[in-house]
Image 1: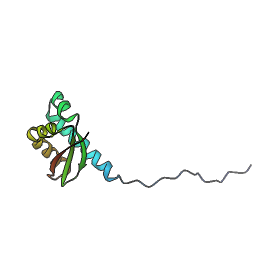
Image 2: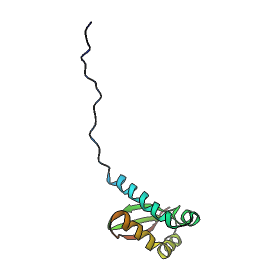
Image 3: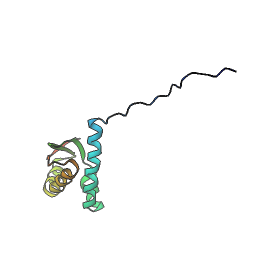
Image 4: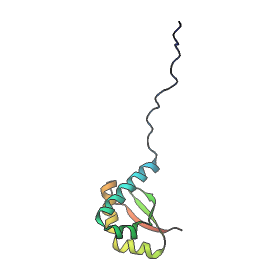
Length: 102
């Protein structure tokens, strides 16, 4: 009987480095988790349930909000909380701006 000497076609792929988008998404998740710890469930759902992260970096965070009132409310009531969470996650104190998105 002959042995089958064919090599396996299975090979290990080199580890892939996460994309900038994946890193930003993970950082946003961490940032949101820190904010959530500081607020009641109702407040968190009311004010952060509709927020989308449009850009996240050490220089600036741009948050998408449903309307100008929403952005003004976050600016007036949660801006410091957002910045302190960002500083903890990113190691920097970025500008935070709010942009209306539909």
